[in-house]
Length: 143
Image (cartoon, rainbow, N blue to C red):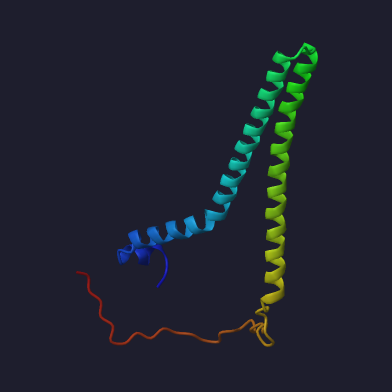
């Protein structure tokens, strides 16, 4: 007895929904943690770029410098922040992919194939020769 009909008939819907939600939360936990770590690293990089930009602005206003050099340095600094964010995202994606390949390799090496000798028998075309259903002493009621 399996399937949605059985689950509904016995009133197990709430239990199965809760179980499904638990399994979904468990399966998505690594993806959520990875996204949170990436967001944290992006925030730290933005803070560092902001501090560096503040230092550049402070030095530009306190010292006698060329305005063009200050502008170029700020644009370069903003590009540096974006490049660092992209590098970190690509690195974490690479690490995730390498971990997935490692898990697949381990699975391939450790799991024994299920095709045992004798399991690939093809039945003859006239199989089964005969068949039948016999019902004895069955009673059913609906309450």
